[in-house]
Length: 120
Image (cartoon, rainbow, N blue to C red; front, side):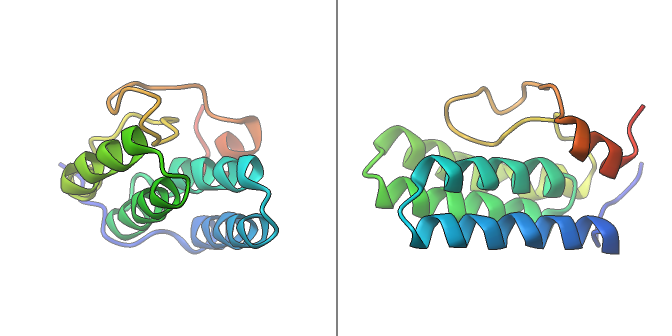
């Protein structure tokens, strides 16, 4: 069994860029774009416990900010289990991480992220 502990440097850079774009959009009240970048950060970081958990933490905070009860509850559940699923490399690739999708559903990965993850 493979254990994921540290995100590779190229993925960390891409992950951090998505978080940066999220913050920029949030500050400028571009909430749809902010969420888009959070979803992308989740896809990139979901195989690594720290990044995966942090994406869900930001999604939880976003849910509170938007007064979205479904998102808040969904993120609390994901925060309880997401990190350890990453550690044992048992995540549904492509899943965007929001409460609007089932937590175990595999989803198509955007082409640019697919190339970054080197998935065939």
